[in-house]
Length: 255
Length: 245
Image 1 (cartoon, rainbow over the protein chains, first blue to last red):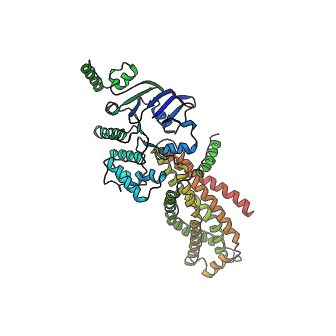
Image 2: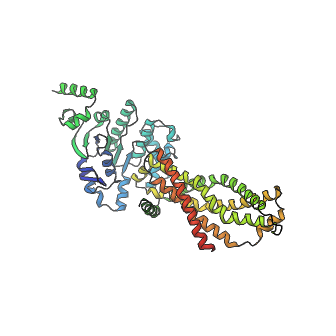
Image 3: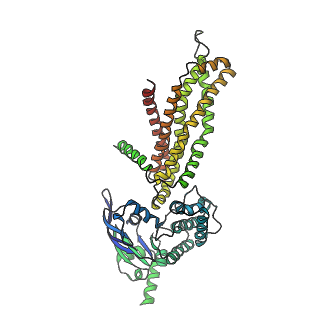
């Protein structure tokens, strides 16, 4: 579980995060949504420990990040997996080497053990047989799946995804969403996803945190987001005609 | 003010490069890869340039000696001095700033743009140690490249002198052996080691701290080449003053 308490972050004069408090539960897929410039990426980088908040605390299963020593922070980082928006696969390595990389850095496994583990997670993300391809030879969807495989290969406790669906067609996007949710359930991971893809929100948003201008403007789930009368949320989520209709239908059915 | 910021950040980067070392099993692979990219991959162009520039130095020297009182062996002597003292260590380093330096800046810069450096940091890896340290170690073999450049520069001079009709083989070899001061080789290699450090770190600095997209990677490569060349020329002057005057 990750508990965020009154987090503030500024860059020079720009106050980006203005006192965000929330929590992300173990075994659940949580989405952080909001418009571009709302502070989602800065918030995710604070959760990852890449940015240190000026005020407030972030606790991982009770351990407050700002109170940890360098060695403890390094150990905690070993428990985190991250799927980047652009996948961030290492160009000079094959897909298998990319997946084995965290094992090489953090475990004492033998080469054959690492290969077995890489084979297992590549199968898990339905990428059997692509081991020796270079990332440049893989499609966008395949690259995302490799990034997920790399993120989970070391059995992380926390999985972070920055817009995992960006640049993917709707069908592949749903496959990636479902894969993330299945992995979250299967391994009982605390998963936090940054997204402004409304399909993802409706598909896997077990918890949704809506950011607006650096504030937490709303939080709920994919069920409650239909019923909310929070204007900021409805303006953002139901900005398209399609989603407006979907919402009307949902509310009509449940009245 | 920006210059002072860059100088400070550069030295902090160097200090950080030696902290939190990457596992040796991974580092070994990275060093071997960088030796291949930076050292072995440069041998061809260095050999080509050294041989022909050595030849040109010889021809220019021979053509500018018209006084019959000046001995013929001076051509070999002048070629040796030019190649060993300046051409091989300094001017090959400027060429390497273009070849190796822009490769380092663009490869690290591309990793920055595509979030690969963020991925390393998220995993708790010291990305500066992972990316820059192997290049620094690989470039410790740079004197090997310069030795080859020295040898081929003098060989190119000899070939131009003999086959161009500017002197005899005996005269040239006598010139190469005349007044040979072993410290000049030490001086050249001290410069080479210093330039190797500059070649590994300044382009890495510009790649690592770049911001923006593909266009900025190109700009960072150009800036890295300019500053690496400027620093090499300045250090060349300071080291020559300190070691030879």
